[in-house]
Image (cartoon, rainbow, N blue to C red; front, side, top):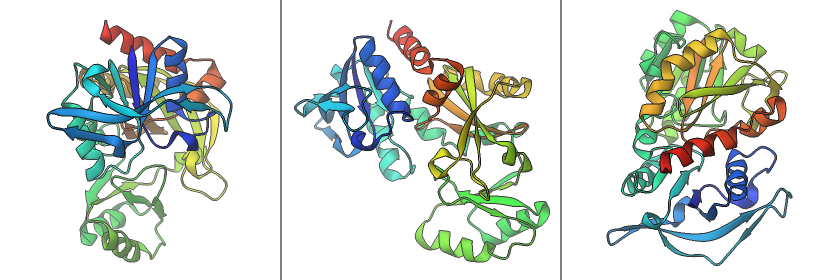
Length: 311
């Protein structure tokens, strides 16, 4: 198959952690023809969705982990698969790209389905499953957020469309910074904020469960660094081996059919204790850590699912 990766700059990836690199590596091993382009290199040109893409070869040698051929205009209708793999922020640029990719999917299979990526932002899809999630409020109004904090005491405040742990604050019962943080966030963004009841179980880890076509295949635990609330590996969270609990399987059984129906082939959900906190569909990570800990080749499972869809 002809496969394009729409992703962030490939020269910056950590080949021992980046999920996009591992997916490209597995595709290459299966004989697929790879292309690479940046989100800014996607355009709509008089009826066609076109990317200025370069043929891509990858190798597991950090610093010399890829070779690009001559870049040319590639009509996405001529490809078999396009990976939507750039990181958030989930802003109007990201949303516009999903609209463009909508125009070639499903004749060209876009993974994950861009229509539902646009309509399933990480922190919003969980609202469909209130029995699985901690108490949550989404608001821009300070009085609403303050009332939630007064009710629950210890809360997590974060941007609704952020990623990687950026802008995540824990405000405990004694904190006096809510007004200042609200002023800060609303001063540079028109987006709402999300506030959730703090889950003490996060000190034992924030579990990333990997689902392929709606089925859980394994999990890793991400433990916050000493003195840190956030467990994201971008900010020093430590990955650990962990198994799936009955509660994890219960959560996956509830959300899996929705993900499968909406074309979300590769999804990473976040579970703290017994609660689902995020459903990551834009650019989930964790498959290399899962492979190292448990020997589970998630990239192979993902490609098996894609190849089955392509017939």
